[in-house]
Figure (cartoon, rainbow, N blue to C red):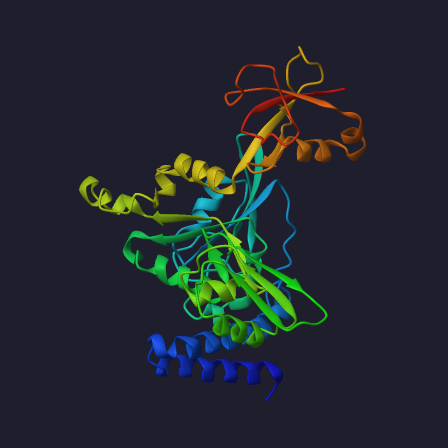
Length: 364
């Protein structure tokens, strides 16, 4: 029995113990320690493989463009058709399972931004445990900037199942990392600073020890609603990604049936161009990207052909550094134009956050 098989056997045993142990206030501590042990074992199993590789179909994806998006879903839900519709890719299309045997990349251009879309093999239940293309697919997902979960109108329930597969693999969709700071020390055991009193300190200490942490100050900056969120904050292997959910083949429904679908789902029929614009806009919003136009002269026109692509939570100091580290040392002033400026040509500090279609001139 090799190391991977031994770890899988241990995982199976811990999962069984968790299932067999009734959850109540008296067993909360024990459940927490078991879940920490399970998380550590899964980290051991998946950690060395993160980033792809291995035999079979190649998954060493060369990323290009300003962001990378993955299409994840059941076999034959129309990922290839959608990819071909919104990008320059030529993904083989068929009406049988596992048409896509590799990762097919395409480039979508939207609002001046180049977004790489990756069509992945159909994901199935058990992928987190290595079934189907399992871990290879998951490695590509972790390296992306946004996940698109897709199903068709006949298999709506699968969206939740696919989401659970990714959750089991340590991928958190549309969630923010917990506010937990770990300050490791050479000595001093484990100290917990938790003004929210989410769980008994002894539970938090033993969970941390089970996760391989010792001699550290763990500071918790939010009310934790579950021990799982605490474990997420201690784990090094969690990936947090924005999510867009898509349902395809909506041409099979009448107008009344369409209205019954969750409004948060993007409804698509790629063959008839239904929902394509909505899909592109959802991707754009999910990525949280903004375009910044630079001015060479304060009274001149901005360069709108080649915008700087930034994240919505970045500021003008980061814009300067992206242009040139040397330039950032010489510039002392910034002036902005656009819909969020108090007035056109407003002078702002370098800590000012960027917004979409901001025009900016830097000067001395």
